[in-house]
Image (cartoon, rainbow, N blue to C red; front, top):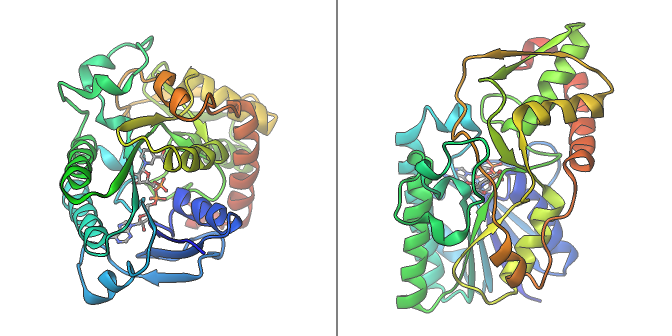
Length: 327
Ligand code: NAD
């Protein structure tokens, strides 16, 4: 039985990944500072540990591990990452250094690092109708903020660990992954979850509008969690060691995202545009290289289908959470 270690196993993507690894027959060790919030973990061992600290217990978890999936990160949506640059950089550098070091010491065979589309230069993303971002465009470097700089730094660190310590590396740049069992309130939620919550709350409160940060014409592509998990396994098994995009290449505006959520909810609410952090003006994934590496496959679940499932789950959370506890 092959052994996999997943960091960030209490988080959104990590939790779904653990389920998929169990379905594939792996022995799974999950590590996080917290249990998954919405569902029990299927990991064979779930260890609560602050990965910023390199302890004896931490190093011992890597004994006999074949694959490391490095997902742990101090992160969130635009509201969170635009205000916490110092902690994001500090925490994530520490998390990634201790994870790489433990993998090196235990002679782990394969290591997958989850980077982000935030590594791409700011100046390539100033228009709503942006050119799609291909992997080579990350340099010359000019990422958007502390989160992007840290991801780019760790990508380099991974490249050096591969060259000098013979770890078989994978580097995945996610483009906006969404779906059920993700953070939907509290300040760290990302745009699709926030939009679903706002619509569900508006219906609950009898309001005829939702608020949207900025003019809503900023563009993004959104990838449903099932596609993300399928892509992660294809990339891990591919043997390709350079950074790769994992996302959809169908760009929509945030206003269109709101319309898709309202359609799933069966309502039509007014969109009130208010000041708020928006990130880059436009962003889309170029999937030419990743499609080739993943044997011709590319994320295929439509925004409409993914949002239907996500809205249904978030609406359920809103219904069962007292209004005073929703933040
Ligand atoms: P998430 O916040 O749901 O999961 C991250 C997990 O890391 C959390 O459960 C958190 O508790 C854990 N963590 C944070 N600090 C820790 C520490 N010191 N020790 C142990 N665990 C710690 O985020 P996610 O959406 O599942 O993202 C997973 C990975 O993918 C992250 O590296 C993230 O940066 C990257 N990513 C995600 C997206 C996306 O759209 N969701 C986009 C780009 C990149």
